[in-house]
Length: 128
Image (cartoon, rainbow, N blue to C red; front, side, top):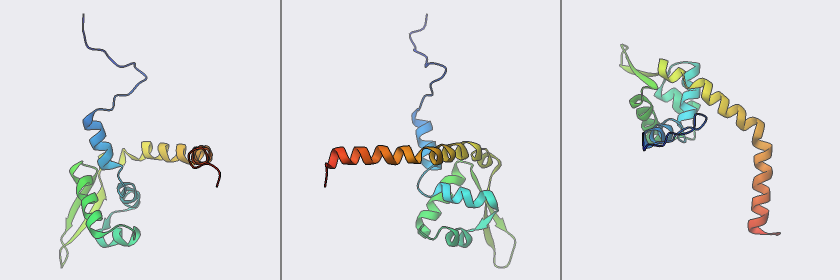
């Protein structure tokens, strides 16, 4: 007999390693970077132009996190001067289906979410 309780099969467990990974892969700028790199490899300056709202410091940190997690590959090009290109890794490509599913869910449910937000705000703030 085991004193360990196992989760129901249709329930997921969100443990510290999962939360850390999701926080790093789905943070503020990662989805934008992944969206760009899924289309084609890009240099830092190309990513910066494609995502103008991101600061260079945040873009650097995002690329490093994604590289550390094996989602993005950093490739040094043998050009003069030497250049660096970022590419989605094979592991990173496996993120596309779940991210697409979440974005599809959001697109379908945004009207319901907007309604819920309005009702909540009206209850909290009261009539103006």
